[in-house]
Image 1: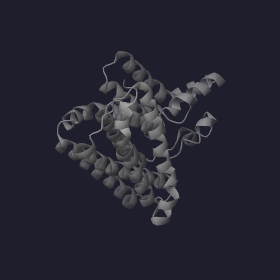
Image 2: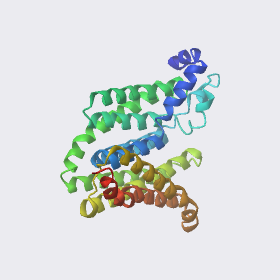
Image 3: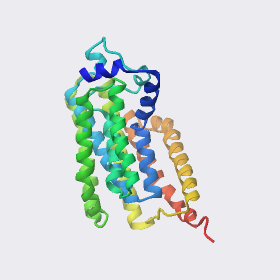
Length: 302
């Protein structure tokens, strides 16, 4: 806690605002948006790599949270203050840091998969700033952040050669997806059977695992359809790429929010409804929207 007390003493309005903005880059919405943009416009294999390693990091993070049940810094020490704007998003147990896990997995993965020096430098800077923002804001301890950085780096470097093999071997890709599916199902069973503390933390863990399961099963379908049928191309002129991203994000958000109420009515269990909804979100972004890519690739041609 010594470092957190030191950072607490140097806080000011400018730094509070700066690190509050920086920390948003570790949000799961940013992770999904960047991963999907890369999947649509840059390299779909890099998209698979970022999404699945990100999912692996998230399930690992959730299992550790529910195993160790370490409270937030201000719960440990009621005299310690945090930047209040960060409180709303700082829910659940403290160890390890979810924002750190997500951001280092995303930006570290982008740096690992690309050779552009400037891009790598930017990504490395983000891998430093976002974890530090969690300390500055007072919502995590150095242990929370350090363990998340270590897990994220291990996953992105261990997974990269596997995904390079999977690019040429569907069998390897299906093995990766199968292992990920079993890991999430195992986590769900662990949360349901071995955590008897019925509180918001358990509810959040089950909700996140249900979301991951829906996304992974959706990716399995996306990969199968793309490899056997669509095989879409990510290339297009720059302004067509912008239109592609805007349209794709609009479709994904419409499916995500539009199916919320219908699925909650159809499925009695809220977690099943959530998993099914995110399955459809992935299908919309990975199968339905890429059907338009041939049109976008023709835009701007003479």
